[in-house]
Length: 321
Image (cartoon, rainbow, N blue to C red; front, side):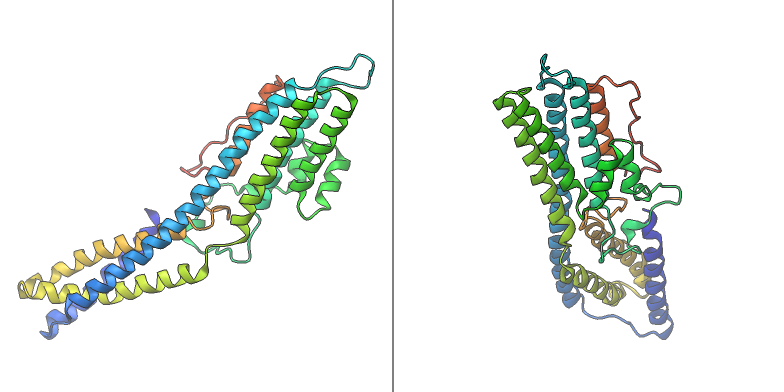
């Protein structure tokens, strides 16, 4: 609700000014409410369409990350159980291979997260959605290099960072190592097929997330939605003053609280759509990818029976990133 106090003050000042002028001058600064009501109905339909479309983008983004969570758990289970020892090959270390596949996957999901949170050319830092409290840590302050270094060998990290889409090449490395394990006979054909299908699922979900990231909500809908809302709010007091003036000269002041309530409703509807339209822009209402990645990491590290398990991400000032 902290975003609403400024527009509420504007609504109060605007309505008070018009009511005062109307009361002092004795001239009712009002017009028929019929055309204003028609405009308000049209604006409500338009804003509703924008909000529905914005919510669909946000919910699709959340479904994508839900699918990544499920597929990640499958990947961790397969990596920890499908690979078998080879008595004739002393260099074949099942534990080491499973650990590499799982750690590389943790690197992958974090690479996807950081790539999706890269700033876009249309990113509006002055939007309501970006009004993050001062002590909320921006997860993007840590570069991909720092994230990958704790999980992968240095030569791998350097190779991935040389690519425009590191996450894609991390999955390629997963497939390459899995193929090498299959050719050695350490995994049977059916299990190999299952794990390759999971890699394909990661590519599918990554591509779906990139589609949302790279194609913003059409600006014509977002821009004119704001224009129509503010146009309606600009003429609304004249209709309210006219209606309340019919009930009595002193009742014209009731236009002030009525305008504030109606203005707040329409303004809030506009803001709700605005804060949901691009769900990967590192704003307060976006998909909490940092928390999701940490959940996946905890699950996968526990599958390896590791001891140093990181703690879940907690919300800071009710904001979960």
